[in-house]
Image (cartoon, rainbow, N blue to C red):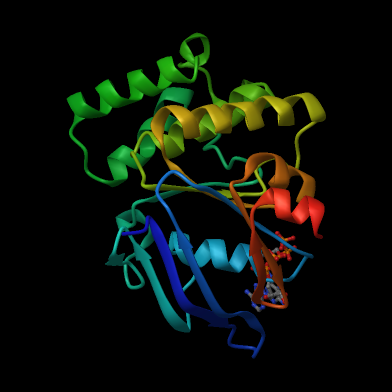
Length: 226
Ligand code: ADP
Ligand code: ADP
């Protein structure tokens, strides 16, 4: 089975906008897939449907063979990293990371074990008890990743997570994402309007246009036969 299958997935907004049209896609476990294309082509809407933030109006979403189309976000085996990281400002780093485990009803000792492991893995020990507003950009980015990964999702969804970062920080998160892909074998779905970034990071690139998947190819093909 595939980690993710989109079957004729579609979304027409109540105002009549066909944001996503008959989208078919199969993603293998551990693959890094990017959606690219001009603003308004349907990348974010597709990602939000996979996450469960937006209901589809046709088709199905399967994760590891299970139809999740009707499940709310907290019952889907996905985590989403947003562009601005969307950390909770009134919470410490530790509390931010723990949040998803609380929502899912994980017991306190298990929460502590998993949060500690994430703090270790993403080297956040020095700032574990600080609140989000005091953190550097790189630290915020690592907290966002820790918060997403701690619930052990099958799929990590990234919505333009590098858009607002300076070049150095962008390089460092790119490196971190590739390392996570190697070490924990998680599946990535990445949305960006920066095609070069998609080419650097991805195993496969989905080019979208007007709500449709226009082309699915490996980055090498896109380089040589654009
Ligand atoms: P992005 O650049 O990430 O695609 P946009 O600026 O297009 O973001 O959209 C920002 C927010 O506004 C999103 O939550 C999107 O769902 C919503 N939005 C975009 N277009 C429309 C629209 N035509 N009508 C209502 N909401 C919209
Ligand atoms: P992208 O992420 O590729 O920039 P989006 O998925 O945000 O594109 O948007 C796809 C289309 O759906 C656009 O035409 C956008 O204006 C429209 N759209 C997005 N959100 C809404 C909304 N809440 N209501 C109506 N139209 C929307």
